[in-house]
Amino acid sequence: MEKTNIASNGRSPVRIRVLGPRDGDTLGAPSTVRDRFMIGGEDSGGGFALVEHLMPPRGLAAPLHRHTREDEYSYVLEGRVGALLGEEEVFGKVGDLIFKPRGQWHTFWNAGDVPARILEIISPGGFEHAFREMHALGDGLDPVSMAAIAARYRVEVDFERTAPIIERHGLAF
Image 1 (cartoon, rainbow, N blue to C red):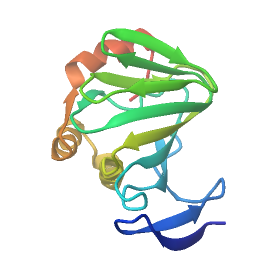
Image 2: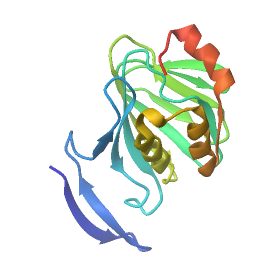
Image 3: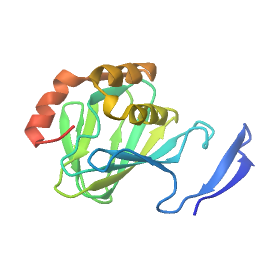
């Protein structure tokens, strides 16, 4: 059960929250990457956002992209997660943290045959709203609309360089 209270961080009111394992908005279909929104930038005074990504087996979470404003930290809770960080491929298992700094081209995927789950810390917060916008399009999400949403958040995407990653690892996107 979610419990909420209001406090001050010295700058603005923030929501103090206790989230249970099923609390928070979860968007997306089981056959795609689903996102559970736990803490938004508006909850943390802008400092960070926390989103749980639930990835189906061999599912690509995002096309190759880079942020100009945000760092991302992916903590693996379940499964095996692959990531391309710049030119280096890495693989994380339960308990590993994958750091994706701003300015670096990256993507990530479920590198296993069972569902994977990560906690994604985005700092500063705000970019989590792009995920909500993409989910709102449902089946209407295509590369053009995805790139337009990304551009609003100052994120570049590269679908051409994503295709070999999908092929090499047998991923669905």
